[in-house]
Length: 116
Image 1 (cartoon, rainbow, N blue to C red):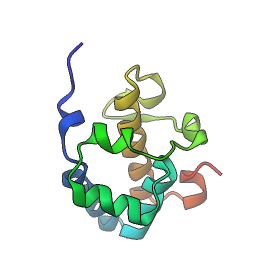
Image 2 (image 1 turned 30 degrees about the vertical axis):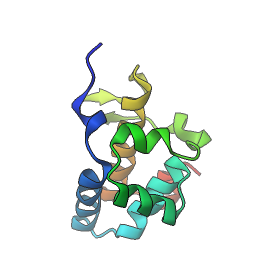
Image 3 (image 1 turned 135 degrees about the vertical axis):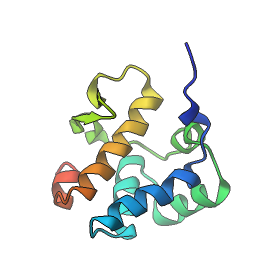
Image 4 (image 1 turned 180 degrees about the vertical axis):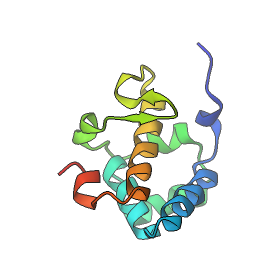
């Protein structure tokens, strides 16, 4: 099975793009951080350490304290693929994150994004 290039991409290179996408739509970096922390279980300091360390996505998710138990409720299409149908667990986690940031940028309420 081919390894996707994004697995080796530094999370710190993509993180500013998530923030820019959200800010262009009137959302904040704090909201992006909240979504990431909800998904992965990182606290603010842990997220900052991951950004500063330059870890790739594979390491970022491998070191995540705990994926939120409601991740199975994240559904929809990202990059033309339904996130709930992705077979590769790491790719699915990356696409979950993409989907949450997309929802944030589209103006969804935080309660909805965090699957409350």
